[in-house]
Figure 1 (cartoon, helix red, strand yellow):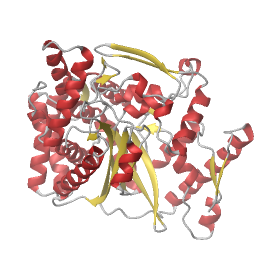
Figure 2 (cartoon, one colour):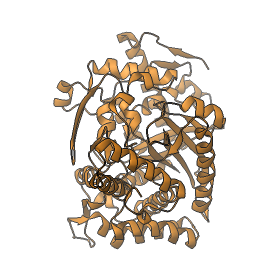
Figure 3 (cartoon, helix red, strand yellow):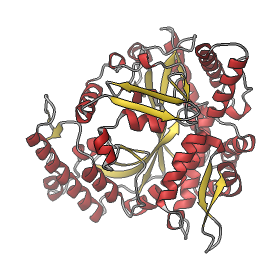
Length: 499
């Protein structure tokens, strides 16, 4: 099938034509859901990790094209910035020793990529935001040389109509402006996919939304940007502000940002795709020749390319995904909240905690989303981003009339959520050795109140106390982080300091 690209961007007639096509795609999705045409999930999970490239001095290296040439594997791809890579792990069936197998695949793949990066004086660093990034690194000239990134940048810049303003008040305050979306490239994340049936989609998505704050609290790993100490997980405010198509007047009117937590629990996957069309204008002017309703009338399955493309430009922290493999459609929940790193063990522990917890919560007879106001879930996410492992979260009390109370995130995890995650992993038929080891990593983080963000901040301040200036302390922290990341012991065991 051919694709048509509007070379000079969207005119009014182009937007109207594209919106009509999106409505056709949405109608096609509704028919697929009504006719129950979706694949029966095989307990499949998927994993993507975005990575940074930095030299032995801890500074970013703009060499992803050269590194990818040397890696020569379709498992590795470009990301937005020239200092980024992404690795995609083939889907795995959840069960048995899958987490140990996943960890081994990651260690082999990342080790190989790091060796190839060292051929061009770089190395792989798995971290939420590289502490040594400067504002001068995140400029249009350092956008990866890929047409779709340029097109996305041009469309978002045109929609906004003025420079992007970054203003993040954390431990310190950062204020600056950008003429492009490239500051988004500072955010490197882990994306966790779970294939679900249409009937289970809403329960899984709602459960994922409810635990997003807990994931962030225990997994925060992004305390620095442009030399400032900000939130313990600074990616969400940075991502929202660096992709914000709304000029200030539209922000004041309550127009929703494209990087979005959401505003309600849902009843079906259709709710989310419909909201995306209703609230967000299309950005990428690419039209496919497919007529989705005609394809359905003829007994086929449409690819819904415009809907998929549009969905990819709305940056929900839990995103609905429509996929198509060998003529069979499927639905996935894509969890996008976690930062990369600190180690492979930490990444896999975060994944085990998520998949186990979501399984249990999605199957509860009195689900958490019936007892927790959505506004509390959104406020929890904000608190977790700001304070990380020291956050306090709102959560339903046990019992039928318990109400909602504030509780330290670490107590909530230790007392209530880890047992639920363990039960969920048992329901997935995960071997007890995998279950206990990886959930044990989460438990120790909570007992010691240590995660990647707290280690970075404590090590940075210790470096300052040793007499280093701010830039030197950030570089030393980054170098030490990279050393310990490659040694592979989980972050709660890392000694604080640059020695």
